[in-house]
Image (spheres, rainbow, N blue to C red):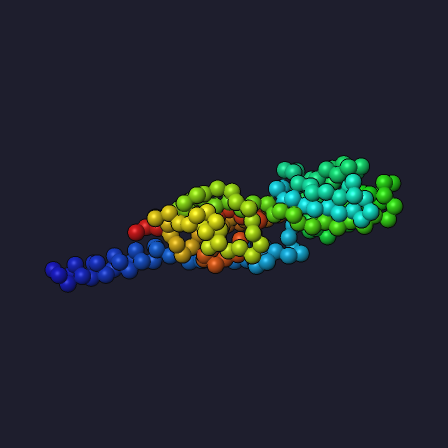
Length: 190
């Protein structure tokens, strides 16, 4: 009888042990780019841009990308920058300014503030937080004041918006976070 109980306990613990840490599924997220965001970063709602028009101090300012992916500049009005890099946005603004408003405009577009990331689940303070370049899931948890007592501390579920739609995956705590990502820290089983 003791032998049966021992075998049962062993089989049960091994089967439950597999539930504690799921396999990481990052292949679809990796296709969207990892690491430092640099020049590959595409603009979206919530980003704040510093637009500098050389020699035109009244046009140079900080602009926020609205929900439709547009910024509103004096003279030329709304410019759709969503889905473009900062370099592409600068060329677009130059083209609109050159169409009768400024002679040979030279425009630079820089990131002022990246859109926020979101963290939910088993963290002390879930919510929306400012993005810091180069951050990981572990850093995001630290920004959210750490894990709750029931948190699974070795993985999280990360969801990212792409041009093709939402992409989710189970990621390790060292996985890179990008602006606009949503992180869900799950509850551990035991």
